[in-house]
Length: 201
Ligand SMILES: Cc1cc2nc3c(=O)[nH]c(=O)nc-3n(C[C@H](O)[C@H](O)[C@H](O)COP(=O)(O)O)c2cc1C
Image 1 (cartoon, helix red, strand yellow):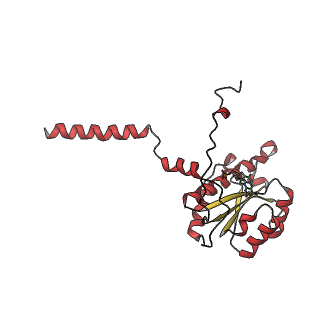
Image 2 (tube, protein in one colour):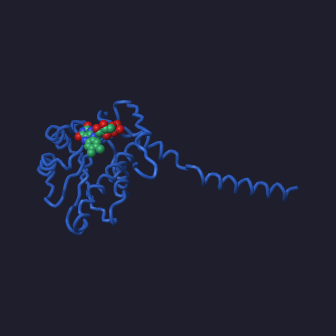
Image 3 (cartoon, helix red, strand yellow):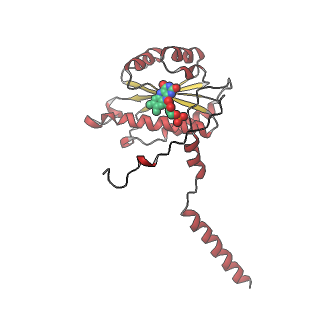
């Protein structure tokens, strides 16, 4: 009787793990993606260095073409710099009220990029890093917004001047981050008409 019970228990445990492996295990990860939304209004609470480090680790975990990882990050906490960015690089007003802003940069030197047509893959690499920053911030109950810089020359040049960025480095985006003052519900963007099966026509 005891042996039968042990065998049944082993079968039940094995069955449980086999069933689990066929379903989405990490529901929280998907939920984090689905509930992210741009937050532009923040409280005065400071975002700790440990939290910023987690966000930067997430950024550097992004995929990159040829694993070249052409990114570099400027962490801006200086209040007058945050205000200068907000005032000069429009529409980057959210940066002015942020606790911290992360400027995602691309090192476009030859060692960090492909030759020829593939050179511009750094744009996708930095986009993936920027998205990871947004998701890591949201996962830590922070609010964040992607402020576009590249390919707008004027914004790139303003940031180069403000942050002493050298010519081979392109400021790609700024993510303003802080504790959310607004309670914003994410939009449902699902649109089945945007999905085609196998071929366009
Ligand atoms: C490339 C890019 C540039 C953006 N630039 C700005 C910006 O300069 N200022 C801003 O407030 N939001 C900016 N956003 C955020 C978008 O406005 C926002 O993602 C969009 O309205 C969808 O809203 P959601 O993020 O809440 O889903 C940018 C987003 C992307 C992807």
